[in-house]
Image 1: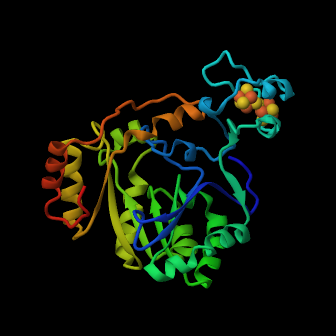
Image 2: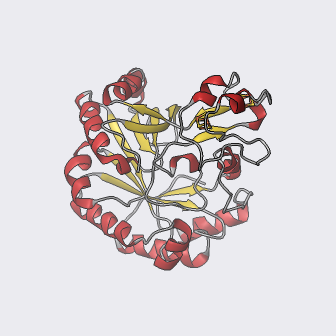
Length: 302
Ligand code: SF4
Ligand code: SF4
C-alpha cells in the first residue's frame, strides 16, 4: 500500500450533486477499497496506489512520451501503452504530453487543501441543507487522514454523509470516524458469503457485523443501499434474502441503486481487463419485479 503520510489520495471531486444525500452536495471520491467488486463503476478508485490513465481519443501519436521515458516503459504496439512493471511513475511522460492523453489518476491533498476546496461550496450547502458525501473507493480505507479531515469539516458545521462498502475496523471507526458522520449509506450487495467472495473478492462476515453494530448503536441515520447488478445481485434469491433480513431488523427505508453500464471505458483507460461485460440498463419488467420484492420498504423510485 502507498505511504500517504498525512495526505488523502482523492480520485475525483463532484460538485453540485443532487443524488448523493440531501440537498446540494460535493462528493469526494477516495482512492482505495478493501473490496474489488467485478462490476465496480469506479474502477480507478479500487487500488490505493499510483496509476496512470491513457485516453486514445486525446492522443496525437506524436510519441514525445516514448522519447522522454527513461525506463522504456511506453509501447504503442500494446493495447494499453504503459508497461506497468517498468514504470517508476516519474511523471515525465505526463508533463510532456500536450493533450493530456496521459494523466495521473488522483491527487494527494493535505487536510487544509481538501478543506479549502470544499469550503468554496459552503453557501450551496447552507441554502439547500446539503453538505459533503464521502465516496470512492472506500473513504474509511484512509482512516487517519479521514479523521483529521472530518474534525475540520465538523468545526465548520458541514453535514457529512458517508457511502460505505461496510468493511472497516469497527473499533477505530466507532471512535474516530462515526462521531463526525450524520448519515450513512451502507452498501449491501451479496447475501451469500461464497458468492460475495467470488464477485467482491472478500468475505461479507465483517460487513454484517459492522452493519448490525451500527444499527444497535442508534447513533446515526443508516440507509441500507442495494446495488442492482444484473445476474449478480439481481436474482430472486439474493433480493429476497436482503428483503427478509432487513424486514426482520425493523428497517423501513432503503435505497435501490440501478445498474449504469456506462463505466466500461474507465476500465480500459487504466489498462485493466473488463471482468463484467453486461452492457444493458435494467428494463421496466426487471424494475417492477424488484420493486415488488421490496414493497414493504420506502425507497426512491428506480
Ligand atoms: S505524448 Fe501524449 S499525445 Fe503524444 S503519443 Fe504520448 S500520449 Fe499520445
Ligand atoms: S511515468 Fe516515467 S517511467 Fe512511467 S511511463 Fe511515464 S516517463 Fe516512463
